[in-house]
Amino acid sequence: MRNYRPIIIEKIGISLPDIKILKLRLNEHLPESRSSFHSHEHGQLLIYLRGCGEQTVQGKRYPARAGTVIYVGPNERHRFERERSRQPLCLVIDVNLLSKNKNRSITPLGELPATELNLIRSRVSQLFEMRGPGSEDRIVAVGAVILDILDPVLRAIGWLESKGFKRESRGAVNTRVEKIINDRIEDSSLSLSKISKMLGFQGDHLNRLLKKESGLTFSQIRSQLRLRKAQRMLIKGSRIGDVCAAVGMNDQNYFARWFRSQVGTAPTKWRSKNVTSIAPIRA
Image (cartoon, rainbow, N blue to C red; front, side, top):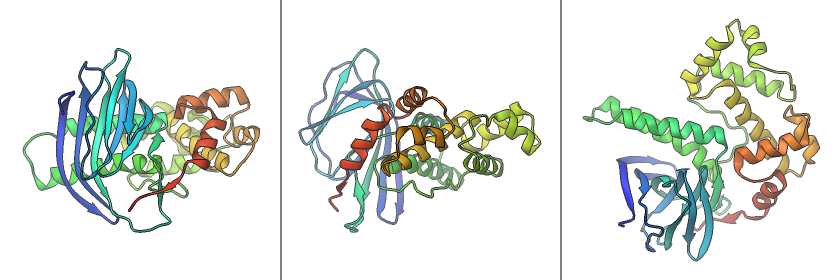
């Protein structure tokens, strides 16, 4: 392929139940407007970190922008066509999804909320910092970062379920803050200041601790938890007004704008796509 410039390449040998991670690289598409059709014997996860364009997979066109996740199956012909002036940046993870479970499903197109996208950008920056001579400690650290990237990506396409999810890498302070937010998520007055007093911290200090432990601020963590609850309720058919109140927002118009900023589409449109577009994976 001639239409992208590889920025970082990490050869990986991580095998987990139902998934094998082969390679990770960060591609910056060059000014050419269109790449040629190509395919691979393995599957690919394409995570767009910036820019926009259109990814064609097996004749189907998918819009790609910051936060878009596209799964390309083995031997599926695909190509990228760039739009606008800013060069797209795409994280590519070569994988083999090995599940023979017919009940497991996957969607070829997913969207990362802004909080998850920011987390992945932070983890990619960590990979840059880890470059250098290999050692056992560094290899383990790199593997941990890659798994942290994979988690929201696989949830975005339905390979992992979000229900009941808890991030194991969360630190003690982050876990306590998440519990408080989840327990009082419908409280629109819940703030960093209130939680700081409950836990005996200064607000700025608590935010620094959260950022250090998870890569996210209080506001980003709350948005992440609100979004997960809103998506669960939307899929179950709850009314927009009920969802809005359940996540601590009093204005439906504000909720709709906030939801769109997180996933790139309106709540009703997101619900329609995610309820109707689930298709079995070809194992």
